[in-house]
Length: 360
Image (tube, rainbow, N blue to C red; front, side):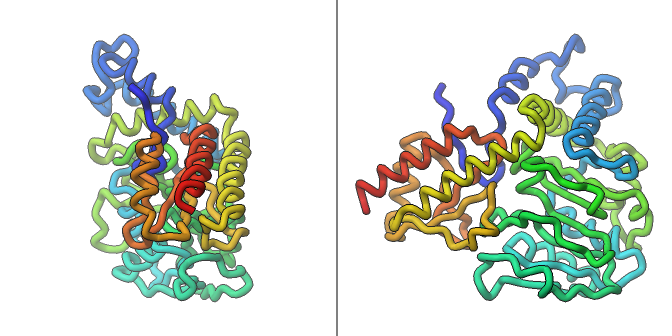
């Protein structure tokens, strides 16, 4: 078997050592005589797996003691609804920043539960930058301020944590969580689907400050009530146990790589060399303002758009797969999350150079 370099935006590639360990433990975890996916979620063995995953996540992100860490279903999309349901807390307005298609989806969902005040938007410009914080309009009476730290589709990433004007700061970190150190204490709530940078599809993580829990909108389903989930150790219902286990293996792998500070340096290096290759060529282009380019998702265009299908096809033959851009924006996109080895980025750059020589 020859594994490819998978540049998918999600579900994305997982670290090979994680997959190898999961393979080795598939039939029997420890001396239990059963697979993790066969275990009772309330049995001692799985509880130990779950508790270790939470402890490792807390260690990697230096999560303060007054924050709850939850493992939930429904992905980030479920949290688009759960955030206003849990955090409006008697208020009728929430504030959002629109920097791409995923923040737009969060805004659309929030409008079902409250008035949305738009702090800033780059929609008219095609989501290629982030407006300066001094230009934002953040109402003092809003329940919270929400932003998306990395736009998977548009390739725009916040490089700093924005000032929330004293409001609880909420962030969708689905596509760059665990790619760099984060000051969790600056946030009221962080949520992230696992399938981009920390595990398989089917599980998401919520990190929420305790004092924000317990005042949900009337009619909030129990499975979206973060206080109920917290009170039940994320096991209000049967959780996706095997996904939780795999997420835990990714966390162990990250610790073995030296933690998030070490991963950040690798991610800076990987993305810098790919952007340098794009910028040095008249055949390729990236539309995002350099200061806000994503380290995780690198969209690019070919000078000859009619060659995009040929590029994707020949790249696949070279072992470089899932480079097509999102269906709503087209072009190409390389997602280079933590699990993408630097050798994969080097292989892509070499292929791009050869493709340009052939068709440029």
